[in-house]
Length: 127
Length: 111
Image 1 (cartoon, rainbow over the protein chains, first blue to last red):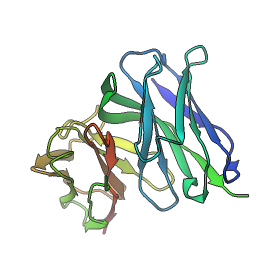
Image 2 (image 1 turned 90 degrees about the vertical axis):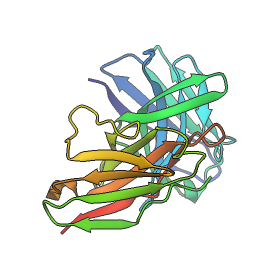
Image 3 (image 1 turned 45 degrees about the vertical axis):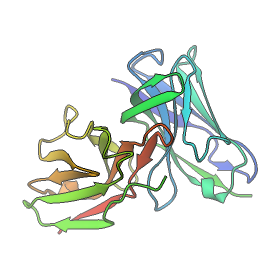
Image 4 (image 1 turned 135 degrees about the vertical axis):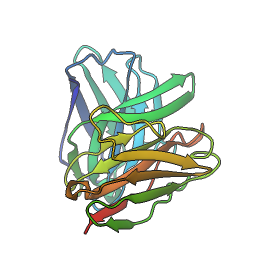
């Protein structure tokens, strides 16, 4: 059974880069059944999709965050990662990783749904 | 791209049925059968309840059903139970420029 677990610093200073890793167990990150995604939820607010990545390295980002988001995959460790640069207090949130079902072709990405989620990790941006 | 529009709250008594709406545009909900619904209990991760508009993942009760009419998708929960009390979010493919868009969420209270 596929399981995901987020890890990373719980506190990041303003203007610095937030870095999180999602470890995949119970299956291979090289599966052609999944993309791998990130979603965040600010305190008391709704969900926001950050982006998705395929094991080959193809990435699809939320256009509103595209200039600050970088995702990568480490197939040797069965992990994928999120980096968010130039953070502010508005980036304080619970960050979730999840399997992202969909289909990508070139620059196009057709998102279907997210079915397996990590438990989430809280990141606070504060000096 | 604005979030999909959901009512902030709905309520119902045990045994009743409720429906949560999710209104988008002809560029997202109206153009694709790619709406998914998530249930989120306080302090927990979201859980997929409906995908591709009407399909239920294995293990999700058949009391949950999805539908769509025009630019509005709906989640119906029949035979309300206390454990259904949670926040519910819709999500849709948003087209080539937006990609993925969530609704603002609906808090369901079981009276």
